[in-house]
Image (cartoon, rainbow, N blue to C red; front, side, top):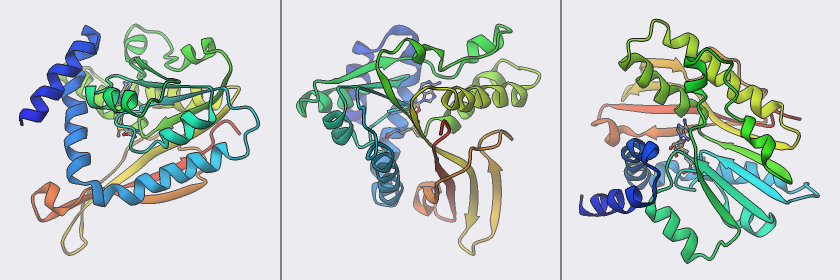
Length: 254
Ligand SMILES: C[S@@+](CC[C@H](N)C(=O)[O-])C[C@H]1O[C@@H](n2cnc3c(N)ncnc32)[C@H](O)[C@@H]1O
């Protein structure tokens, strides 16, 4: 609790005002990731392996951008920092502990950007959302990784839309997810998409008590690999339920 309060205060100091409301959710992820470290290890290894497989044949490795870099658990940051001239991490929030760790490891070519990657304000303003358009301004861009952020954009924006009483949240969410996937597919560089696409909540007998798509009906690109991620094991959900997400790894622009 004390550690969390320190982490909150230290992060708030270095986070632009508009992104401070998202610190709590990053802290939630931090707590969950710590509690579920063993259960998440295989998922994180799969993510690292896919990024490794993506960059191994690349000849030019100038700038890499990671969307939804979060706690840098799914992302082989040492490998990216070693192999690329510059690595840009984009997220709503970069926790103080993540910033300190990057400094301690002397990853001096890693840059951090706080940015809303959802496109929600454009969509609500009646424009076609282009949440990844800013990537066109990034010089020498050779790689973009979307690191388990797509479903989170959907969940975060659903909360905002439902709270404001929006008439058709599902339609907006599908447009945002589609815009992210189309944005990736349209980039003139190598791309790697890691995303959970669906989940199931099961009881101890294996009976499915809840299941849903996490991409709001938007078709996922053809997967190179797929695996299950026990996001909330039994003890996390209070003993008699677990939530397992289906994850895919894809190369949308190739
Ligand atoms: C499941 S976590 C990804 C974990 C991360 N790749 C890692 O290695 O620790 C999803 C991340 O997406 C970020 N995120 C969610 N919605 C976002 C948005 N609209 N814009 C930018 N980042 C967002 C969250 O802050 C979180 O860090």
